[in-house]
Amino acid sequence: MLKSEKINNISVIRFDKVDRFNALITEPIKEEIKSYFNRPGTKLILNLEGIRYIDSSGFGVFLSILKTANSSEGRFKMCCIHPEVMELFKLLQLHNVFEIHDTLDDCVKSFS
Image 1 (cartoon, rainbow, N blue to C red):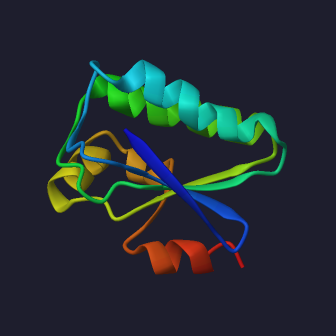
Image 2: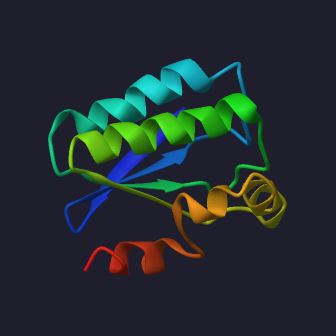
């Protein structure tokens, strides 16, 4: 469900063949992403390109990942959020909680 790559020592994760992040898949996704922060100081980008729907359990996963990142002195950012999904981030005031960038390139550059 997830694919990852390294860009400039930053882990970039994106969903593979998934367009909905909901309760059916949140638990394994959460555990997989949180495992990246087993190494302190990890820099991670979650690329949400292609995700058209996120439910409350999905947003809960993002908050859990952010907490894990912060406790391990890591950094967690997101990019490429679909406009309709971004409206949900704004409605929930989560655009003020997460560092979100329009493009993957901008997100990578923000770590410099």
